[in-house]
Structure formats: structure tokens, C-alpha cells
Image 1 (cartoon, one colour):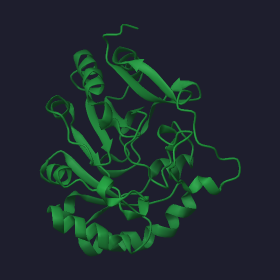
Image 2 (cartoon, rainbow, N blue to C red):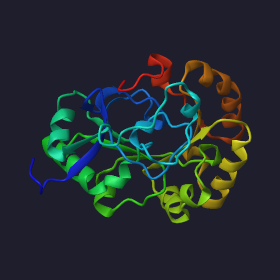
Image 3 (cartoon, rainbow, N blue to C red):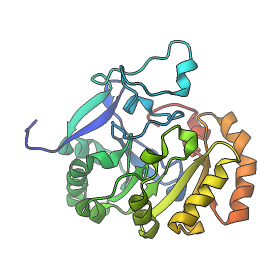
Length: 257
């Protein structure tokens, strides 16, 4: 591997970089066959995160709901990060037939320069490649990154994530994405009280209702079912979109699907 090549830090799953072919399970593109590239590292630490192996490292103070689960341990950072060149990742992505690529994480926008190189290589191979990025809405896109991205799936964190407000709410970034025609907002809702926070953010940053998706928090079919009916009614009342988690409905809480 040439040291001059951009290096991506990807999540490692079953000994391999987590790159897989599935369908988009959430938001505006739900149901679209897609190749997922899961980056490691995150600048937030959500208490209910289902990809905590991308940030919940040994020796860190972060709290997670799995702390109560017998045998749960924080992750060895070296063992759970795969270092790959952009060219290596592109080769793996090219092995799949889909041309919709979802850059997910962790927080992918922590690694914008290396992702730009990945997207450049894929578009060089086939201009039909389309790129979505899943982001927590705390980092501004760099111009070259913005030029490649077709869709921002912005998932700002609410108080239910257990992240302090000073970290999870960055006004300049909110304003940027609220005005960006490629950006769509997805809020993870755990209880009815979360709605007041969503409405406050919508009003503060002038987010159009049709750009907002509400998604029930849950890693099991049962948890999603408990929140689904009342959340659909909230969407109907406020003109928001509802999104489920199709991958959880189909495969449960399995990784890499």
C-alpha cells in the first residue's frame, strides 16, 4: 500500500472491512439496492447506537445501553478498524452490481478527503455511480465532497441520544443542510416528548416539513412496532415523512446486511 494513497478507516466485521450489498433500509431511498461502506470513528456517542463498534473503545468513558448486558465490553480499537486505501475499497465496491453507494458509519464526514478519492475512482469507472452519505449533521461538507454527493441523509441527534447539546447541535451546520437541496433530515424518536425537540429545531433552522423523516428507535421488530403507530400519527399531523427500518424488519439486528 502506497503511503501517498488516501487511507480510509473502515469498521472491521468478521475480520473484513464492512462493505456489503443490501437495500437502503431508512429514509428517502428506502428499498433501493445499495452498496454500504461503513467507516469507523464518530464524533458523537449515542447511548442507543447499534454500531458502537465504530467508537466505543476500551478506556473511554462513554455510556451505552448495552452496558447492562451480561458480557458486554468496550471494543479494542485496533481490532475493530480496518485501514484500506481508497483503491482497495473501490475494488470491493465494484464487485457488486448496485450503483447506489451509501457512505455510513460511524461518522463518514470525518474522513472526507479519502472518501472523495473513493468516489472519484468509482465515477471514473462508471459515471452512473450515485452517492449517499449518512451523517449526524455536525460537520460541514468540503467543496470537493459536496460536488460528489447526491444525497445527504442528515440524522441530527436529539437529547435522547445522551450527547450534550453543545456537541450535537451545530447551528451553522443545521443552517447549511436546511438550505441544501440534496439534504433530508431523519430524526430518531424514542418517546412522544421528543416531538417538542424536533419542532423546536424545525422552527429554529427553517427546515421544511417535507424534508423531515421521523424514525422509531429500535434494534428489534418488537421495539419498532411499539413506537410505529403513534409515530405515524405524528407524521400525519405535522406533514412529516415516516420511515421504518426495513433491514431490521427483514433481518433483525444482524450486522452487515
